[in-house]
View 1 (tube, each protein chain N blue to C red):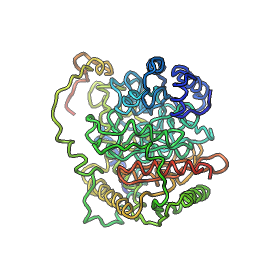
View 2: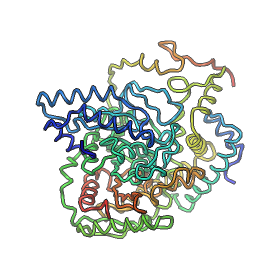
View 3: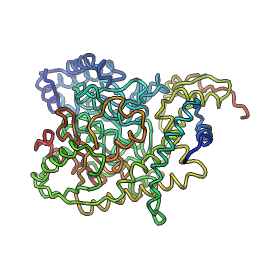
View 4: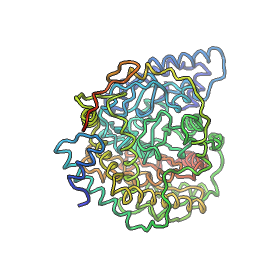
Length: 100
Length: 479
């Protein structure tokens, strides 16, 4: 078994995701099967391989971190706040944060 | 009025005043009203926006002004792509009432080129799925066989174009979500290279893989849509400055003498016999066109699904952290902030999304990151190297798009791993960042479309389109 019930509970906690009892066991079993399948990656010796985070060559994405920091007008605050479940413009309102 | 419109056909009809943009838009809304209850391809319509745009196009015609390339073309857009003022749900309950305050760059460019936005198409929730059965708003039916899936995740866009409910549509492809539904519904469908089309306004699933691309009824129309969207956008730092060729001008070039790689790894076990025969016949079309067929090896193909489900779920678990019930979308109340987060996400996300968040969080978590995520990134490099090696020997790679034709609704929903394997021939190109198209290549059982996939090297869209067009012109769709 690759993943235990306790692992699923821990991961759901990390992801702030409420799972029902029946979901916990269903996901555990399904993800166990998927991880078993993913285990085939260990057939490959990758000790000399550089990990690939994204596909663009350096010269294609170099401007990503080098663009000018220019201020442009953005008058959408009202529209954005209208999408919030509980807004008190100019703020988003959320329940009180307490000690866990 | 004609049944099937192409972009050129729309232009001719507008300039000769056979039809107005308004009449054409209303013709398409009429078709949608007649078929959508059955197909469930559209989640929302945008008649006001369409009529305003059509009025603009009609005023250009009346004034005798030159028309932009997509003037009056009725367009559908997948519901993971932001449209200002038009509800964008991602097929999820968590965004049920979300109305974006801005347009995706792709939508902005298409509208600036004259396209008329009909509405938003159904899809698997957050583009996670291969059958469109993971939509919170119900499955889409395949117009070619309504007891079957249209493929996914861009199933609504594929079905809309196949059923004549839009002249073209936008989809998104992360592991096959444009090409596979294109194949299963029998329409040309393309993803450009990673970086070719801006992702600004595409609601993120897996940022290193997500791409926007077109569905249309002809390869020429696919090229026209890609043409308008392609190119650098300052709002997406991964969109490149690589020059955009004139794709339509390239279409007419002869394909004789081009070298096509046929990788044996794409013809293994698990492939439907009928599909195999059609793809072999399709390859025969290229032989007759004078292409040189070359057997090649892509040895890491078999590891692509495993690699993909590590990388895509890891990125998804991170991207979907933003749905916290604070700034937009659903909120399920709780006295504490963390309780509100947990309940909102537990209620708002559907089963496949939760499955992927759990898997993605697990492969990134302490103690497992090296074994899964880092390993996945390394194997991704090997898969990309397979493509680079192949393109030193051949101009393009030809494969099936999907190992099977459209399956029945409900047939695979209980087995996530089996569903993931539907993308076995498409995820490779996603991981490598190369462009790929699926073009219709005959039907099996008399009605179920088969798709032939063509990969080109990064930013080699022109060659991919040229081959797909030649294939289509040579009767590839009816082999």
